[in-house]
Length: 463
Image 1 (cartoon, rainbow, N blue to C red):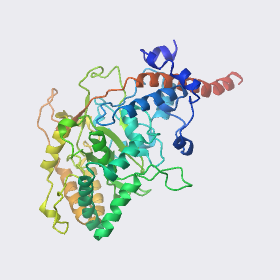
Image 2 (spheres, one colour):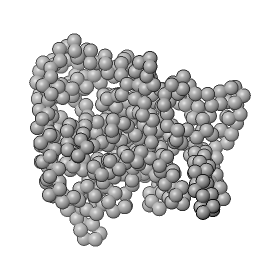
Image 3 (cartoon, rainbow, N blue to C red):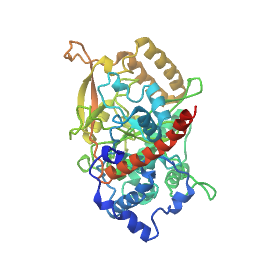
């Protein structure tokens, strides 16, 4: 039986004539101007030749409609049904292995899967051309890159003349003032305006310069803006510290946390967040793999992941939580508008479908580390934090809580005790064109796998 038969049934007949129509029009596999100039991944689901027309069709449908509040969350098919060698071949093509290993080794990703009972998240391979944030968002929703720069163009338009731009920039300025104070900087009003324009220019759809094949990399404010465009929360999983080759902490990494579409009423937002990984200055979408052995398989209820920072035991930070308002006097003290942890928790529960779950010690690799190990890590990070002023003081206070992580005395069926953690409910829902894309990709991957395996088989026959 071929992969066409075993991978996934229900091919979508609506695409059967697309290839012939596109060829007749002379546009079957012609790259766009942007695609021709940018170095792309030669692997991945959307790069399968048979998927070129499906992706074009899907993009056309998205352009005709609206990208506001997209409800789709991409997931991979069950790869465990294939022989180990082919499964490893697929994982090598589809997964950012370096990102996965680094974040897992740092205890930032999948630390809740120690007992093998909870859902694992995988970072998908994503093109690194300066547009990786928007590529990752597009992959995480629809299964293909933002090669037409539709999301990036919308991002630029939102920042330059969008309805929420002033509120977004106030939130950005409030946070940036804290970071500036930590570094001993103070901007003039003219410098604030220049920095603001730089944020807009970063989102441009034009390459860095006339000789470049990549775009300007994006920052945290662009993630916040994207959350407003999509009307959907975004959660970024990242390491907390940049480290040297010997593992010594050098500086904080600011991207990790929860980005909420504050300016949009929660009732108008999609409550399943977009999950992204950030590693080595690169974004990737975090997706799950469907599994026939998963008890929630086929359930519309989805699955849950903790919203707890594994190093501190506290909730993930909500970035840009404070908007001082249009009448705020920027010379006033920031202490006048504090944002307490309880306030952040209220915001999280408004925009995300949350629930409390009990996790047993064997289900939490990171949180079950010895007190001595956590204490050593905390001391190292607090030492670095002291170099960053008020930001450092805030970070230091959080790390003190590592030895005082709140325990839940909720008894398990085995008579033990676990931790009650706030979780977010994730519902995967693939768009109707994705199943056909996955089917085409698996067939293409199997052909490449067979060609790769053939030389080694022949050499064995001639030994």
